[in-house]
Every structure is written in structure tokens, then in C-alpha cells.
Image (cartoon, rainbow, N blue to C red; front, side):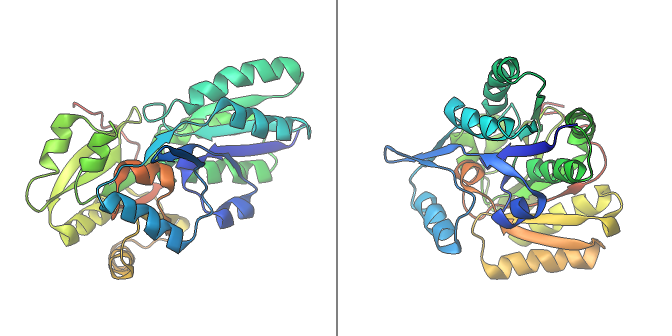
Length: 297
């Protein structure tokens, strides 16, 4: 059986440390600012993070592109040449066309590399919701599971990922077309903070609202507490878009007080998700009750 290489994309927001630990590689999307296109590199420093989000705070917009087909070609052939099978886990198809691009290319490459398997999975998630599925797949690969076995497990677990995110407003998401205009409205009322989840179909959905920043933190922690399964066996992932150290600590303390998780891993929301969601967003991710909510219900 061939060795299996797990590949993701810039939307997974995995840190270099996590990718090294689990043997994961990723295909880079692109950011575009003032006409200059750059790879969406997840190995960025706190200074670079702060500079990035300050551009958006200043009222300017950073746009993004999906993974170019040439980038998929490069990274897929890198591992096919080594005799590996590939499982690519990408951002929700509701938010990026990258999975479709990868799937078309995979069909061509399987004809060229006879006997190799390439599975392209729509994670139905983004950010660390995508990332924890990628980690799950990498653990299975390290344990000797085949590409087909990994594909089956991840397809089954996609909607067991629980995402609870809060932002100061939905302006950035609305401008990027990530939420509907009607949903954006209540996020702009005085002091109201929207709570966002990934719905059944992988849409970013404005799910609830809270009055004030602290209450929005309490709300996302309460939702996770109500839905997480076997927290003592899990690492909970906390990601943020250049929030203050005080706010991050405040949220970590709330989690520790309410949910007996094994560990909390804290990192930044990366450039692709960050360009859409805007500065000061914060989210928590873990496995929990199966997601059944659908936008419009």
C-alpha cells in the first residue's frame, strides 16, 4: 500500500508547527492588495499579522483568490513522484472553488500516474474547522490507513465539527459575499455581536446574536459547552484575527472555567479567512454534536 500524503490549503489556518508535527502540506491561495498578488502563507509572524489586519482596520480591502491550478499541479506531482497517494481536504465549496479545481486536475493526474489514488474532499468547513479534519486525516495516515479509508472517515466526520465564531460586525463578511445581506443587517445594530457557525451545507451562517463583546464570548463558550462531545479527550482550537492578548486570555479563561478540555491550542486566523472575516474576529472549534442547522431554516 502506498504512503498517504495529506494536503490542505491556506483556508485551513494550520500553523507551521502543526503541519510539521503531523506531516501535512498545503496548497497556497493568493491575496490581492493594491494590485499586488501574494501567496497566502500561513507561516506569518505576529508583526505581519498585525500589519495585515491594520490595513483592513484602516478601511481598505484585501481580496483573495482560490488555489491556482498550477499550484495544485506542483504540490500533487511532488508527492505522486514519490509514489504517494493523496488526500486533499479543502475549504468548503460554498466559500471557495478550490476543491472543484483540484478534482478536475486529480482526474487527469490519475491517468498519468497509474495506480495512484487522489481523493479531493470538500470539508464543508473553513479555518480550523477545516484544520481539525486535516489533523484527523494526518493521524490516520500516520497510523497506516489507506487513502480510501481516510476519505471515508473524513466524509463521515465533516459535520461533527462545531464552529462558533464572533465578530465585531458582519461588514467584512458581507463585502466578501460570505453572508447574505439580510443576515448582515442584525450584525450592525448598536452593540450587537453576531455568532457565526458553519451550517449543514458549509455556508457561513449568522446563527445567533449577543449584546456586547463579553457576552458574545460567553455565548460561543456556552454553545460549545452544550454541544462538545468527550471534551476531556479533545484539544479545543481557539483562533483570532489579531485580538488583544487580554481578550484572548479572557476567552481562554472562560473556556477553562466551563469546558474540561484536554488542551486549548491558540493561533491566528490566516490571511484568506482573515481578509473575509475582518480584524478582531475570534472562534473556537472542536468535535461535537452533528450540525443540522441550515441557513434559512
